[in-house]
Length: 336
Image (tube, rainbow, N blue to C red):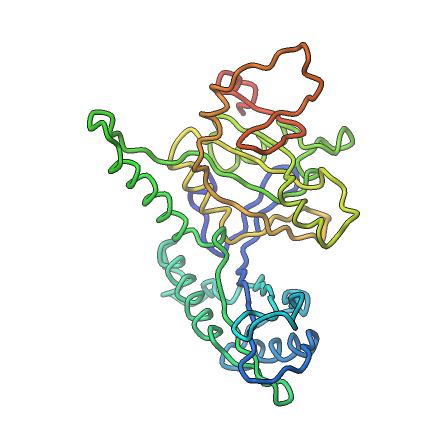
């Protein structure tokens, strides 16, 4: 059985090439003004007050470094309406060891993975409810905070989304004979460092072989595709004009079975990608393929060798600087 199938919610998952998936909770914070004041926002003061609230009872988060909370003031505060947000933030809770069963506790030691998962989701829901709508008073100025779990971190909501999607497709089919129940089989991971999927001392671009080896730890792969994550870099380029293209990559992974797809998606949700010897913790974005990437690519017309000076292809309106794929008839190369 694949390691991802038996993975517990707060258990790390080691991957090939020195990588690992580390569990953590990520919350998106949004701040609004809760009074009629127009005083300027002090980001450092807001962050300090929120950290103090998180570390003190009743929340009492055990280990919460300052770096795990970021607060950023939104631009053009004078032009914003009073009901619009004035700041955003991201909270990471990376130390989840307090949720693990303790030795000597007979009831805890006998917990099944399903019970541990239920305990984790119960704690997460409780934390979100306690944080939702709180007011922070900073020297007489009040701010209201809302909390949201990122879509790529909520496996249950994501599973419901693909079940609803394929159910609606089944109901909307005009031909009753062709009404065949479908399920997704392809995940999309974006925002991961290209160099972590590259062959060491060979190239800085992600390697098909290395990428296949890494994702094979999550299940049996039918085919995969790698491309530059130009859309993510375009967004980051607003804040950093000197961003080098090709730092991040986007990976499509098609699994042979629905069970492997589901186990891989569950393992990727709510975790950060880490590499041995690096302090970087990558919060990638993961979702499932609605558009049928490999089905569309299969029927794309072959490009002519003459008059084609640009080596990049366009798929779904997105330009790919390089693309690699492993088809099912070459799987023997990667068997253990």
